[in-house]
Image 1 (spheres, rainbow, N blue to C red):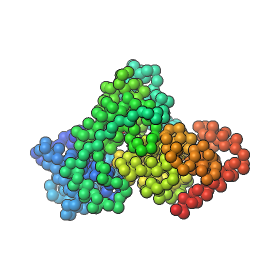
Image 2: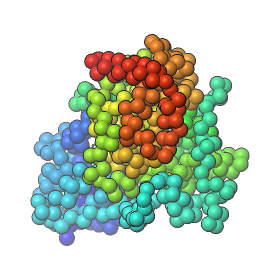
Image 3: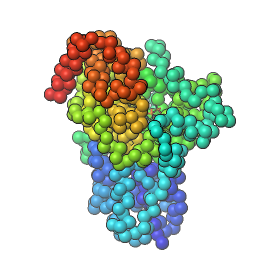
Amino acid sequence: MSTLHLILGDQLSRSITALQDIDPERDVVLMAELADEALYVPHHKQKLVLIFSAMRHFAAELESEKIEVDYVSLEDKGNSDSFTGEVERALQRHGCERIVVTEPGEWRVMEMMQSWEERLEVPVDIRPDDRFLCSLSEFSEWAEGRKALRMEFFYREMRRKTGWLMDDRDPQGGRWNYDSENRKALPKKLSLPRRDRFEPNKTTREVMDMVQNRFSDHFGELDEFGWAVTREDALEALDHFITVCLPKFGDYQDAMKSGEDFLFHSLISPYLNIGLLLPREVCEAALASLGDEHAPLPAVEGFLRQILGWREFMRGLYWLLMPDYADSNFLEAKRPLPDFYWTGKTDMNCLSEAIGNTRRNAYAHHIQRLMVTGNFALLTGIDPAKVEEWYLLVYIDAFEWVELPNTHGMALFADGGVLASKPYAASGAYINRMSNHCGDCRFNPKEKLGDSACPFNYLYWNFLLENEQRLRSNPRMGLAYRNLDRMSSEQSDAIREQAVGFLDAMASE
Ligand code: FAD
Ligand code: DLZ
Ligand code: SF4
C-alpha cells in the first residue's frame, strides 16, 4: 500500500514523525507552496521567502536520499492553493491509499486535516509532533487540577524531567531562576557582536523575485534578506550564538538600543519554529558551553528558561485551551490598530525603533515585542484580534501556537490572567531604564503631563483608571493602585483628559 507523506512548511525536520517510516520504494512526499497559506494573513515578505526557500532546499535534501518528492510550486499550473486541494490532487496523481502527516502548529490547519478522512475517503494518520520537549498529554497532565497555570512551576517540572542544570533534585547553583540578573541596561561602551547574514543563493534569489512579484503589497522590506534557509546554515547561526553571544545574553536580555536590532539575542526562533533546528539540540549546545570562563550559569539558565520553559509552556497552553482561548477579551479592548504599526512613522522613538526593526528584518526581540509594541497596544486598548493579526504576519517566527499565547495572554492580558498573573503594563520609566531611546525622542519620560510628556506615562495611569473595576482586586496590582490612590482628583482628571485627547487623535489619524 503506497502512502502520501505530507510535509508542511514548518515541518522541515528529517526526524519528523511523518517521515519516520517512509518507504522510498513505494511512498511519495508531498510538499506544496500555497497561496492560501501565504494569504491567510498577509505575511512579511521575508517570512514568505524563508518558508518557500527552506521548503525547496528541504525537498532537494530528501531527493538526494532517493525519496520521491512531489513538489508543487506556487506558480505551477493547476495549483489549487490549499492543503486540502493539493492532497486531493496528489492522491489522484499517485494512487496512494493512505495519508500520513504530523500534527500542525495551528488549530485551523488541524481542523482541515481532521476533515480529510471523510472527504477524501482514505485513512489519515495524524501523528504527534515529537520535536517538542513536552508532549501535549504530559502538559495536560501537568495542568490538570491546577488553580493557575504558571510558567515558573512548569519550567521547574521540565528541569526535573530533563535533569538539565540540576544537582540531583536541586537546581544547580541553588536557584531555579536568575531572572533578576537578566535585566541590566547596556553599558554605553559595550561592543556588540557581529551578526551572521547568509547571502541568498540562486534558489533563494528566485524565491525573492517570486515573492516580490506576487506579494509586493505585503508588509516589510526584502532586500536585506539574510536568514538561513538550510539546516546547515541554521546550525552555523546557532554555533555563532553559543560561542559569541550567549555569555552576555543573560545580562542584557531585556535591554534595547537605538540602531541595534539584535544585541545578544540568538535569532534562532524561525529555525526552531520551521524545524531546521530542534529544541533539544539547542538546549544541549547551551548546556555544553556552561563554564565560568565562557557562559556563566545565569546566561545559560536564562537561555534554557526561554526554550525549555516559555516556548514549551506556550505550546502546551495553546493546544490545551484552543479554540476558545482566542475569543476572550477581558479588558474589552476595541480600538483599531494605529497606522504607524505599519509605517513606523511616529514621534515615539521606542515604537519607531521596534517597528523599524520589524520592517527591516521581520524580527524584533522579546522586550521590543512585549514592552514597546505590546505595552502600547495594552495601554491604548487596541482590539486583541487586530494586534494578534499584526504579530502573526509581521514576524518571521510567527505561527499561531506560539504567537497567540504570547500576544493574547502575555502582552494584552486579554485572557484575564490565565497565562500571566498581572498585565505587563509599564510607563515610560521602564523603557527609559532599559534603553537609550528616550534620549533621541521628542517626548520626555520624566514628564507626566503636558505637550512633552511621554505618552506612555499618562496612558499608563489612564489604563489603571479605565480598568479599575477589573484590576484593582488583583493582588499583584496592589502597589500600582496604592500609587494611584495617592494622586489628587485634579491630577487624575488631568491624566484622563490628556489620555483621551491622545486616544481621540490616534483614532482620527
Ligand atoms: P532569544 O531572545 O534569543 O530567545 C531564545 C529562544 O527562546 C527563542 O528563539 C525562542 O525560541 C524562545 N523564546 C523566548 N521567549 C519566548 C516566548 N515568550 N515564547 C516562546 N518562545 C520563546 N516567539 C516566536 O517564536 N514566535 C512568535 O510568533 C512570537 N510572538 C511573540 C509575540 C509577543 C507579543 C511577544 C511578547 C513575544 C513573542 N514571541 C514569539 C517570543 C519571543 O519574543 C521570540 O521568541 C524571540 O524574540 C525570538 O527571538 P530570538 O530567537 O532572538 O530569541
Ligand atoms: C506559513 C506558511 C506559508 C506562508 N506557506 C506555506 C506553504 O506554502 N506551504 C506549506 O506547507 N506551509 C506553509 N506555511 C506554513 C503553514 O501555514 C503551517 O504549516 C501552518 O501555519 C501550521 O503550523
Ligand atoms: Fe518611548 Fe516615551 Fe521614551 Fe519617547 S520618551 S522613547 S515615547 S518611552
